[in-house]
Image (cartoon, rainbow, N blue to C red; front, side, top):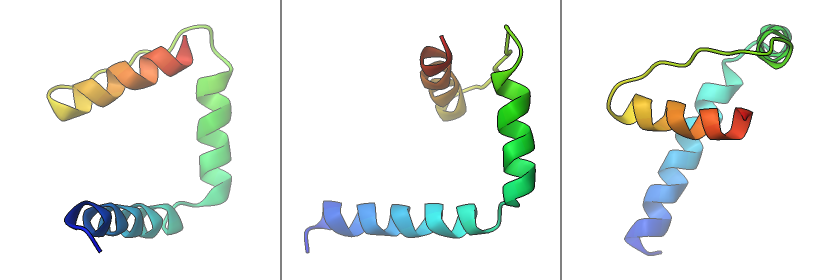
Length: 60
């Protein structure tokens, strides 16, 4: 297994662990809350800022 594949596997495992701790009902409430309004404000700095810009592109 390449180093890249191993790192991708670790990242996928971390995402799976994080997602397993999310309450599905609360996730649905969150999705409904951000899908309904005409405007969503996103803020982030550094890596978080880059991800917020990526999310902004998907929301437009």
